[in-house]
Amino acid sequence: MIIGLTGGIASGKSTVSKMLKDEGIPVIDADIVAREVVQIGEEAYEKVVNNFGIEVTNSDGTLDRKKLGAIVFNDEEKRSALNEILHPVIRNRMENRVGELKEKGYKTIVLDIPLLFESKLTNLVDKIILVYIDEDLQRKRLQNRDQFSDEEVEVRLKAQFPLKEKIKWADEVIHNHGLLSDTKEQLVTILIKWNCLPRS
Image (cartoon, rainbow, N blue to C red; front, side, top):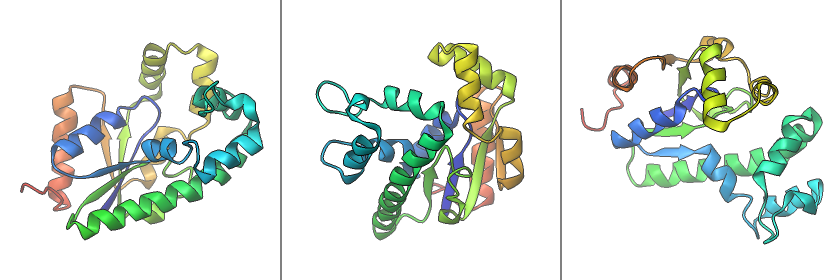
């Protein structure tokens, strides 16, 4: 089974991802793949620099993800242009990784995709787990974690569908407001229900 793990910015999805790995389930992280495909020499890197200019690179030529992020978060057209470059490449690489893991005998594989719904990638997965927190807590965590201003927080939240909207599309929801042990218990319950625990 291919499980899609998603959430919102600062919802605690990375924590759940680590818990899955601790259970022996391989996780393919879309954010890591996104960083790989824009390394110098990669086709997507060339396309990004050609589209957004040399000013989105560091002095050593590597992509300055912060500068690029600042541009696309504030401009929907530019965000769409970046997505058109990156999404097909990221998708192909993730599908290749799934194939490799299946060949190694893994029965359950998790695709950790923050923008699973926004990027219309739900057809890559069989089931979806959403990591949910309410919006007020999401704002607080985002400000504490990244030292964002109120305006920066709003820009980032608007770039994603609200978590309460995503609930209706998920197969299971993990409510991540309490203790880590509560979050873990919810996750294990879901994995047992789906018969996905390698150790069970």
